[in-house]
Amino acid sequence: MADVVDVIVTDHVRFETLLRALRDRSRPDLAEHRRRTLGELADLLVAHATAEESEVYPKLRELTGAVDHVEHGEDEHLDGHRRLLALLDVPDVTSPAFDRALGKLANSLYHHLDEEERTLLNDALHLDPAARQALGDAWVAERDRLIAQSCGTRAAVAALLPD
Image 1 (tube, helix red, strand yellow):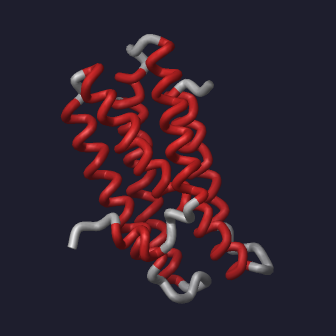
Image 2: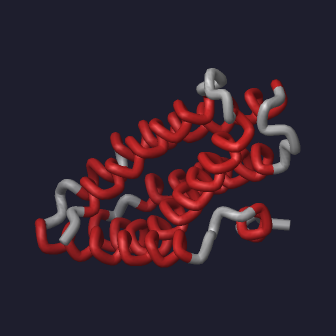
């Protein structure tokens, strides 16, 4: 059983760890490490956001009336997907272009995580514990299902964006 606030914040911390690992240029196996870490970040980022939009955001809108916060969170997810796609499209993961695209994604993501924790997740703290548990369990199940499907591939991320 998982409290929705706890599990989402745990992923937020994981995002920060993965971004730090991607910025670390000291590794002798830089290209291999970055490709592997980028794959993990992409899967987690897409699964996290998609599960929030399908399992958590609708319930928070219904139970707390946080319509503006939900819509803003969805807009920020879309921005994150655009920036992730730009990063995935950089052919040389050891290049300055990769570092620039990574910086743009990191800035967007940090902004979103901060806002989400101060607004939507703060709203969720007002739900009764059983509702938070149910939301957390549903969110984890959907996130894990999406990760198992490798939801962070370039094609999958591109499919999330409007034409």
